[in-house]
Amino acid sequence: MIRAQVLICGGTGCTSSGSVAIQEAFKQQIEANGLAEEVKIVQTGCFGLCALGPVVIVYPDGTFYSRVTEEDVKEIVSEHLLKGRIVERLVYSDTGAEVADVKEVSLNDTAFYRSQMRVALRNCGVINPENIDEYIAMDGYAALGKVLTEMTPEQVIDTILDSGLRGRGGAGFPTGKKWQLARVLVPDADQKYVACNADEGDPGAFMDRSVLEGDPHALIEAMAIAAYAIGANRGFVYVRAEYPIAVHRLQIAIDQAREYGLLGKDIFGTGFDFDMEIRLGAGAFVCGEETALMTSIEGNRGEPRPRPPFPAVKGLFGKPTVLNNVETYANVPQIILKGADWFKSIGTEKSKGTKVFALGGNIEHTGLVEVPMGTTLRQIVEEIGGGIPNGKKFKAAQTGGPSGGCIPAEYLDIPIDYDNLLEIGSMMGSGGLIVMDEDSCMVDIAKFFLEFTVDESCGKCTPCRIGTKRLLEMLDNITKGKATLEDLDRMEELCYYIKKNALCGLGQTAPNPVLSTLRYFRDEYVAHIVDKKCPAGVCKELLTYSIIKDKCFGCGMCAKACPAGAITKTDYTAPGKKLPAYEIDPAKCVKCGACVGTCKFKAIIKG
Image 1 (cartoon, one colour):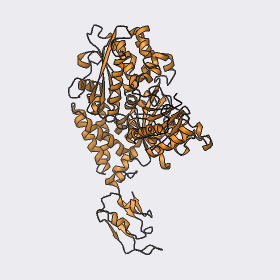
Image 2: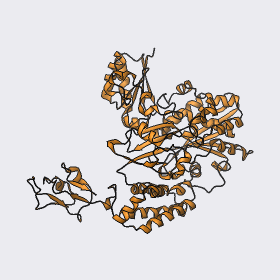
Image 3: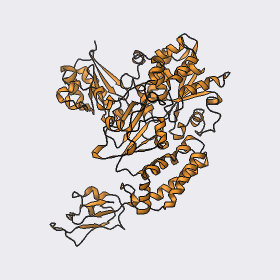
Image 4: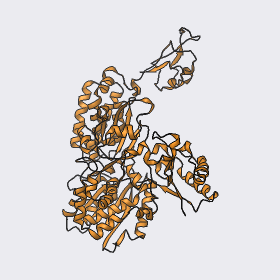
């Protein structure tokens, strides 16, 4: 009889930290202690707290162990599983609980989880994603059974429409409306398709990957529901090849669903046929755009196509197609089971439900969070994310990746939803949320995202291919102190030209990081141009290093570390010091910063 379960995170983050070896160590120790019949090991998907991995949770008490190593496994088995004594030094207790209360510390008690509401991520970190029976035990495929036996396709579409579910991939188009158009615009089509965008190319984004790794059957079930709703019988999941764990588990799930009769012919004996397959992408950011994605699935170079016609009329292989991303689909089974009213009771007036964010950057707890729409940025950064490390101040957050914009500190209390973000010059995007502290240079941030866009442009249209390149050159000149104030006006004009004339969403949104940083941090641009200074001390060409001679002890460590021979001894000896001070020759200095790291007396300043 099983009396305890050991859940071990098998997401990409924890896998890279050694969770596979930890799982094997648990297996060996459990067998060595004669507990194989009493303790079950479960490999799960991502728990969300990626910064604390590898993560291990012991049930039924729900004790949450973080940063577990192979060496810790023997102690957990001998103390916790054999003797019932929690290994306190490994317990993550960001709860305010005293050590005496450590047994009460579970995953849901942590500050990271208290404000979350998991819908799309409901099974991630809970079930073994490679076991279809565990998904079924969590009401898996009940929604598919319901729509096939109790609902018409029109009723399914009406439910999704009424729920207010909007696409989680970026633009926020109403999901039910997209399904409705695909059903009614070409009613006599001999073939229709459903497709899933699991490309997820934004830097720092890993929401869809985590769902595929932790709950792949939710995607399969939702795509089958969508296929029934629009009259399709075939589906494609487009996922980047850089997601090997996600691809592996999704293929296992597809094979299991076929074996159980949940994919293929005559599903649930209703006469409904549906099957699906995986198509691997080579990692091109432009293939996140729907028409480029479909072009790639068809076996061609991933380039966008003009719209109209829209995919609902002419999509994959020229047939009506519905395309949603993984997170959007992950909400569908729960909406069917719990009803549209349940879903639309969550969130704001125009943005219903929850949103998954990948927290990264200068924040204490990097990882994956899911919160109701309308949660403020402050709640996400300070309560869930644990705030900015090292006592630094929050400066901005970038949402929407290269297609989004920055949110400055003045909007920390803004409720996050589609419309509020657009109003302040950002966008929801797929859900990447990169936090920046006071040491971040916003000009450099804009340059970083634009470098990415320039590199990822497919080159099909001139505004994107040439315009973003010229924009990057302007930004580069600013970071080197070679620009003029007139260049700011020209840069802004070019931004709006690109937005208006680029062929696809990649090009149209490429200038957003530049426009938003110009809007909220223009003073930093002016400082780079007029004062030839980078206020954050980031832009290398504008940096100067100098030694405060009265603080210098004359040890010479900085001179030894300097690769350019730019630091030499002077004739000046500071009061109270025994050796002559050193100085830096700005003409020779390559601004590598090696000297700063070697000075124990903080005598070298950067400015």
